[in-house]
Amino acid sequence: MNRFSSAVLIGIVLCTSGSDRSFAAGNGDPNESVASTATPEEAAIQAAAYKARLAARAATDEGFFLGRTGDFRAARKKFSQAIEFDPKFSPAYRLRAAACEKMSDWAGAIVDLDRLITLDPNYAEIFNERGFARRQLGDLRGARNDFDRCITLGTDLPLAYGNRAEVELMLGDDSAAAVDLAQAQSLAATMPDSPVASPTPGARKNQSHHDARRSGTVGGKAEVRSKN
Image (cartoon, rainbow, N blue to C red; front, side):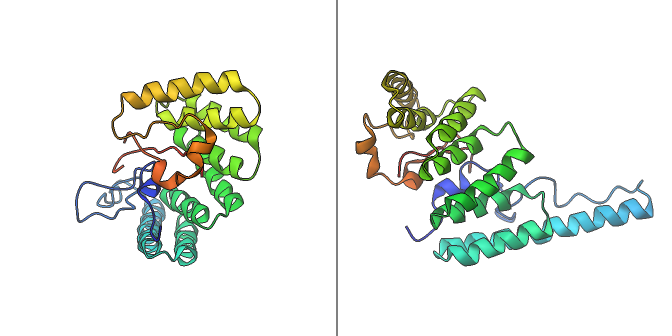
């Protein structure tokens, strides 16, 4: 695949409904003016923060479109620039992690996913992302812990259970894997655009994790991964 997959977007609230808005809108209203009641010092700080956020959004947009051309290294550099402009701009971390994944830089992806978890420790799908990256590096118990956390936080996406079942099979916990696989299939049956988890890891092996990840929300929010 020579572009960022839909999975890059699903899982982060980046897109806005208006065509005149940046895909990397992030947090806050770009049209919001600096509070008129602020002191000159406070106003200057707020104005600087606003300028930094706009610069971060612009760099993230550039990185996104570079990613669509398949130039993930250049895209990652743009996302890094965005983070330098505004270290709290979470979409840049999310997309830089995705760029790292495209280049199989799982350790690099984990660094950004760690940061996202620091920014929002209750973002279930990021634990799923990190679990997938950890599994790629052979950290099966770490991956299982992340999938546990993802599910505990309330996700009802079938592949969250499918991912955990896969790791459980690799760890030799067949009974737990069977329960999770059944749950994944049950949930998939209620979500028409979610792929049903394959019954065995081997059957899932040929399915790209980017194409397999589907969301309940991206344009909505969240996406989970199946085995690469």
